[in-house]
Length: 452
Image 1 (cartoon, rainbow, N blue to C red):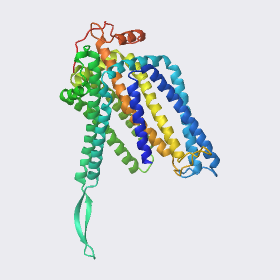
Image 2 (cartoon, rainbow, N blue to C red):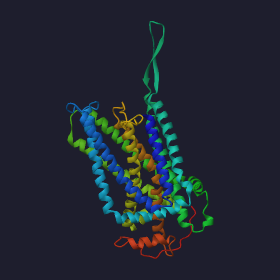
Image 3 (tube, rainbow, N blue to C red):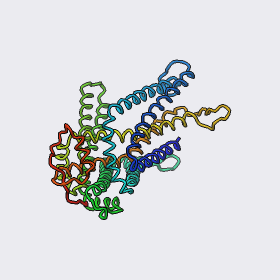
Image 4 (cartoon, one colour):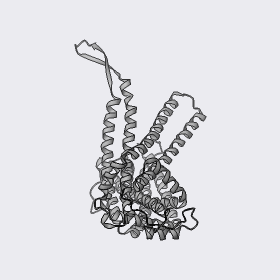
């Protein structure tokens, strides 16, 4: 069913790009339509799973053997997924009811980000180029890793009775240690290009926010931002990606040695097991904190053009002074974008499930699909959902970065004296900031136009 996986990727890519293109012009109706589609899609998938579970239940003979090849076990798996998506449908409904006022705020923020993206159409294609680079790096990394892992050296030569010489081979351990260096280098390279992508998109949005003169806004601002990032900010991005690669590499080493330790110890030591889990959880939390700081720093680098350390200190101070505002707006906008990804993924999975379970031409006389011979039909369905989730995230990430850039640009704009660059956002914040912990009580300003 490899063609189905490719079709799901293509379908998710087309739908996500259409959403990204339309939402720039019709923000409010499309966001509400997306949330409604998310709710309806979750309910439809739940109903479909219940229907399939009932059909399989009528065909099952015997008890559950807890084997994937057993029909009763497969019916139980489908029923469990039906319960899971029933809970997801109820959760989405509750969230939409209680967050309906906050969703209006998220729509206003997305509308401001859409104004920036509408003037820079090329930025919508940048994630495709970025992920194409990821694919090339990943392919190179896998090929070199396989060669390093399979390096052997000839030690002796034995003569067989048929006069054919066969060499006995041993692992070349010193050379295989290069695999550790290769893993770290691959992580560093992936995080570096991820930072370049975020800084490039942030540079486009920041230029739209700070430059009020339309004549100075280049029609090729995405390309200009990309080359400006490589020329002036590559060192800062390399330092930030080094931090991320180091933390991720430490986590990989810890998980590797923890598994070796668990295999070496024959007894089930409870305190050791929990200690390893606690350390693993702490490393995960620390990585998330570093990731949050690093991504915010990339945005500030694009806004002000300062070094990594100066930008990190400044953005942390800025976010601390606007803590409630940043958390609330980022959370609500992130929830809206996540619902968009879920809607695309759930409809892709629903189509994949129907194709996998029922395959063939429609019989006009009976109007039903002939059953397919695919036994584990739910495995391709799950894979299609995962791939659709990843591909849709490729496009919604553009809005995620744009929203963060607009928010930090406004906070920086507001912290200086003068007249605000964005009147709509200023009025929105003044209306919504009641009870906020923002310490910036000074009036907005007309800041110096930033081009880097």
